[in-house]
Length: 367
Image 1 (cartoon, rainbow, N blue to C red):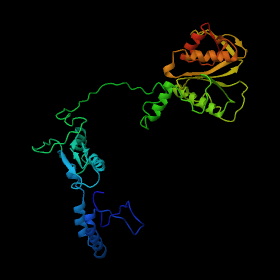
Image 2: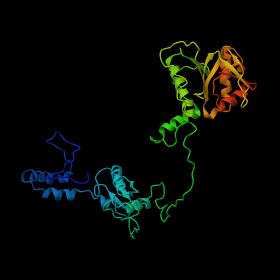
Image 3: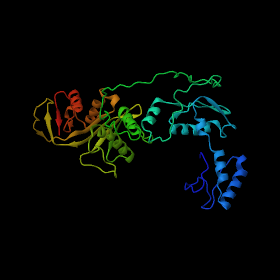
Image 4: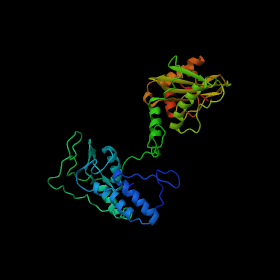
């Protein structure tokens, strides 16, 4: 606290032993005067000694923040350790809109309070928000013969001496609403931490839990797999859900292990310790052929049981490197068919259409 408050103050105290007692910390040299002032205030309701004591013990914050460089000596100007004192004084300087430019030494603290043009303009334009504020720092000139702060390395404190004010220009800047990872650029309520974590996973892939043993680079997760594997598939499936703004996650089998009639499964491909590729699939027997040409009609119905791609996702840095084709080939090999016999769920995205054209240029099955 900056002062002792008394005579009807309704503030609470940080140290108390119940409603009838408080602990008042004072420098040792003021103990006797404080006891006498308390007795006089209690029995005679005379607060004159308290007023005098409060004036004597009031912290000279205004003097500490006066313009000009000075050395404040511990034991003379302040009592706590210099680093602790500087932290306290920086908070006070911030309330005044002042930059402290402080540095602690073994037994003192050097300060050089300065006022930035921005803080000066703010306080001059909004005097009602800063009543009683007076600019004591602008235009201050150090008198001759003042002590010089000792050099201890680091940046030269005079590198901004005589610098001109930064000017700003009104220009048109990109105002993209969404990031390619699917997050909104304007929704950075947590300082961007959530976006950073999601964007990193979208870019490099999902790091799997350490308790999962990978015996190969490609894992096939089914609805009967252990819950840790099914949860990992769900985590990876959130990446395309967020990126494409799908309403539902493509992997929702997080309950008890159970078989599905259409053999739902997920293929997880790893590289460099991350899951970089994901393919969700099941088996179905309702298909039509499509030659992948714009405006062309679908072919006749086909009731052959085929593996059907529900969704494919690849981490951003691994795209256009054959990862999607590897996943499709793994699905075909696992089912025991050719890549051209694999069915694709509709609607086929632009990226999916490009992939389908590479792995099956003569056309695909859709369902």
